[in-house]
Amino acid sequence: MAQGGGTDRADAAGGAEPAEDADRAGDVDQAGGGAGIHRGREAVFIGGAWRPAATDGTIDVVNPATEQVIGRVPAGTAQDVDAAVTAARAALPGWAATPPDERAAVLGAARDLLAARREEIAATVSAELGAPMAFATAVHADLPTAVMASYAELAAAHPFEERVGNSRVLQEPVGVVGAITPWNYPLHQIVAKVAPALAAGCTVVLKPAEDTPLVAQLFTDILAAAGLPAGVFNLVTGLGPVAGQALAEHPGVDLVSFTGSTAVGRQIGATAGAAVKRVALELGGKSANVILPGADLARAVNVGLANVFANSGQTCSAWTRILVDAARYDEAVAIATASAAKYVPGDRLGPVVNAKQRDRVRGYIRRGVDEGARIVAGGPDAPEGLEAGYYVRPTVFADVEPAMAIAQEEIFGPVVVMIRYEDEEDALRIANGTVYGLAGAVWGADEESAVAFARRMDTGQVDINGGRFNPQAPFGGYKQSGVGRELGAHGLAEYLQTKSLQF
Image 1: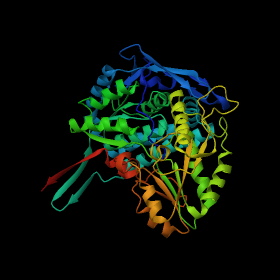
Image 2: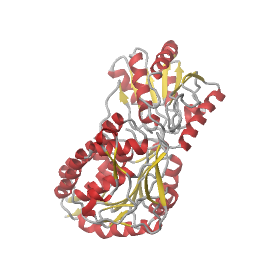
Image 3: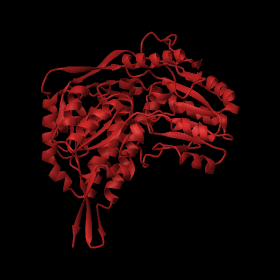
Image 4: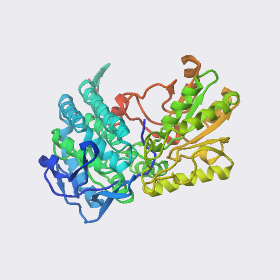
């Protein structure tokens, strides 16, 4: 679903409260509706306790809707990462030997705590990411809870041993996991990595994105309160080129799980390859929304725009290219133009995460105009009436050629391009004609025709006629969209290695 995309950036927090004081350790302010916002703790979490970082450098957390500082966390260093990895390695034998049903019980307790703190989670993500509260609650709070629940069940039910002829085949934890997560779905991406790693018996060092570290601290408190043994989970916030790079390169890390840009993913893959270290990479996307002749055009376009504009377009799997047959292209453009007007910045559409991202997205919109595409909704100018905040107008381009940069490169903002095709073979060529292959959608007059087209798409996940997201189905990409899978049993398999005993 809504993974990946933006950058490899993370932050650190500070303070020195023990884990048992987790509920009282961070500063909490009240948000609208009485929900508390976690304001940040100036400490890292290592070996089961909050403690000061190795240096006194900090990172300000800014609300992208107001441009105001709402929290502060430490800028962790390689020294903090080393301490966290050391703690994780010390805790590994005990956690790996813990029976799966006991690991499942801890994950179940974490699931219950996530549900109990739903409003606080939603308010915190809304404040640090700028997501509207309704979306923050339904997606940023509820989806991670569902994923945690799925791994509590899998940990108890998964067959970690099986007989194959005269052999006993064992599935064992891969070891210490270095998890580097993005800002666009900050808690979901954390849970999608940490939950299967813990279910498998691995220990974890997490470096969250520096734009959205507050919910990572809140999650850390939840794991401590759930009864996770000391050292099994550790949190170091910091910048990607410092803490993230140190984690990816650390010889004590057995697997690096990264979600973010393809450029950074290449660097991590190269580093891991030199060390013969396992990686799981969920990277960029430029997914196609293919509307076949005979499909429900209005529904396909409207759902497609909702998919892209959700989370302010900051979704790696967003269907940012709408492909329509030439006979109905003009009608589709008219539908998209009218639909886009319903997404009002500051109301239904939140800001993008920071000023750099805002300027990047607006730059792509200007580039699209320079390339000859036609804007039918939105544009590069700032939205009227919003003096503060990193807002971008929801933008729809028509008359887009498949080779244009706006049709090839990941923009990571509320921008949709509409491309006409002549026949189904032309549509398939266009859909598969990028370096990415993360997700997509197909709309057909019937399920059979849509599935037949989807089978030929070079992408990891395809929604058929508006199929719902399934948190237990494998998620991941083809080509330069990544390596490995997240979610469900396939996500659990990423954190396991296999041993056979012959008798």
